[in-house]
Length: 253
Image (tube, rainbow, N blue to C red; front, side):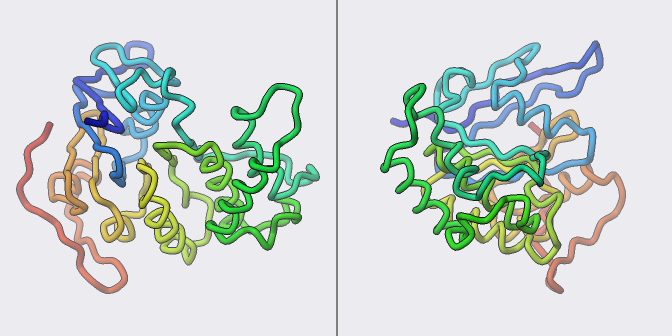
């Protein structure tokens, strides 16, 4: 029996005495596509950092693929929210994507033909192969995001974590990006922090709403409890002109 992709077991975390997460518990089988939603400052990024092993819980435990996060780190791909870089630096799309192969390359050795073939395959998959020689600073925000996803996928991860991947891209790119992630999800477990509620409700397999506490739902529906927790005011959810499913009862975990 294969281990769960993610297990978060009664996790508490605080910064300098201020509690940020309280008794968070959920588990995620491999092959899932989880969206983490919630208000700014509610603890979403903190929870992601705990799953990545960047932070350690005050209480409880986190397991990734059955192991402690730092032990499983080579099976993890990560696309951070802020990918700051010098846009004038002369580095190509191909070179950025190849960075994902560094952990697999021998120290002091150049990338192998196998590395380059793998990156070619991934760049084609994310629709960026034709731009392989272009300086990354000359790309649009949406194109750069595709390249950063390619770099994360070049590590051949079992789980791909993304922190608000549409925060700096054009609104028209949002649906395209989630269509891409849905395709990637055929092979890789995905965990994404997002504010794109209208888009994700038609793409995700499970949703967690985090605002100090956590409500986890194993279906792709956004529940009334999640809306209440995230926005603390009445919300009618409409996206693309169509109402999405909102359940009216749910247990808080």
